Image (spheres, rainbow, N blue to C red):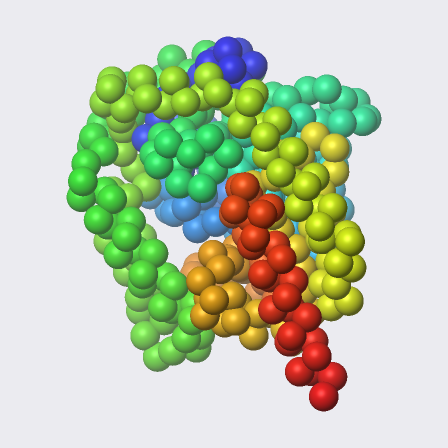
Length: 365
């Protein structure tokens, strides 16, 4: 799509579908190292929707820790994980719309090790690299492949759809593989609603006796939620909405600046704004609070009808991974985000700051 500036592209059912197609294709093109299953390395705080496709393509998933500063991968953490896991592919999401700062070095490492590099731009469509060797390049033009999403709450929100893009691969194989997938249907949306309820319940009541069994069953039960294709009418809707990308990105950055100004004027003692850098496309208005205020603020916001979320938690429990990921776990204990819209600027930010202030006063008494 010319709006995304990538050389080759194909519309997919969602971003997750695009990841599946890449992994399925490469599994058929190259043998796994040492005769084992292919391994995809991903950050421990990525959305589950980015990892389930690897399981469907019969890949193993291994996790890497992230920076506690912005939840993104760093070169040092990736290099350590490469030495430990010897992956065949690396998934690099630009978390919260923030470009990964070490992308050039990570790309070089992948090239040296023969590892497929997949940029996950699901929450960062329209972003660019600023500074260094990649200065001015759009996100999604550095990896071997890039995946984008136009699903719910993304930069361009159609409610469904995504893209697979590449600078070097013509993607001629992708349409053939995608043709074997079912079309998007009303059942897909019903499955997504049920999946979200189940996952939210498990997260709200951690260490429950059914957690392990449910997590093991979810991938098989929800396959059609992540792997499907669009009919021509749906594809046309996605293309039409994508044409608005430039205006949407500009508006999001304007809203972020306006919300950031309100936040700076309030100077909350127990919270800090997410460190957005130039080139970012804010997915939501994200901020960090002290861990002891994290759950109380969520509860206070929900009681007042404030649409707050705590994405993204560590994905390790969902995969049965008992490893330690300090950066991802620190993010999980602290990060919160709000929809980025006019309502947030006009009212929601002030509501959150007021509730936070009240919690701080109660803590001090």
